[in-house]
Image (cartoon, rainbow over all chains, first blue to last red; front, side, top):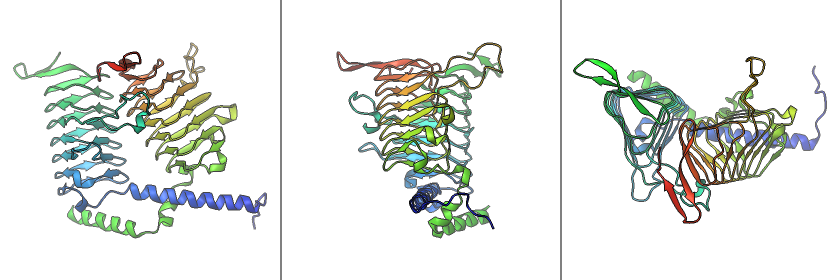
Length: 212
Length: 205
């Protein structure tokens, strides 16, 4: 038979029990939040579409998912009606594949075209926290009015890349790893860097990718 | 695939009905946060949400109403006197990584987006490379600042009051108060002029 090395005092035991209870409550809340909503809760949910748990999905009624979509685990689909008079809408087209740990912050409209492939840890946001009032912490300030973000058909987002508000990523564009896209990307263009700049473009006449 | 889908929905329904007690037990022991009394100080209504990886809780001061969301990693070298202070009403979003070997002070009302990295050391390079490692130094993030998605706060940096660190910025120099920085390395793209009360510069680089 094993004995504890030191017999805890009643106060210590009480503390431990309270701690354990508190932890369990927080853990249960977390696991409840990280459960994906039922497909019927979404605005649209196509066939053979998967949002893999654990994930955070807010306002699923404003999310419209096509067919054959996979969104891997730890995704954060943050669709929030945070600006007055603007109803958020997140549309993801058919056969799109989004890597793990993606963060999509949608207050206005984000359209991820069909057949998009993304690596892990991407960020797509159509707004930012306002910081214009220097006397209040940014956390207490409202969200800026959103600008639409579009990810074109057949494009690719590299690992750790970010697409910021008002940006249109063209058809079949390729965003390199870690790029932070702050302005529009033309179709059939490779962009890299932070902030992102174009380095290669598909030349239809020469049938090859040429440096920009 | 439809059969699999039905199974998945059934499993979700079962999980909804399961008791919170069983749900909580699924969090592995090494992913649970330390108890409140193991921290150097721990304010009221603060939560470090599991699953998380916290080491060196004896060197961590947590104010009240602090939220450290899930999948974060906090490593503090408490045995060698390292200190991490997280001020009141600060919120660290999921996936934050904090590495503290000397001192990191995060002020009050700081908010962050996902996957930020805050470190006051460049790692144990001194035995691996010929030259000395770049000097690390204490990191200070002042009140009301905002850390954008995936930004990196490098050693020795002071992020000023109400500063806005853009998405994916790699901050290696001090950020003055009420400034917006973007890019790698981070550069100032916008700043607040207290004399005129206006913001100068562009929103994005």
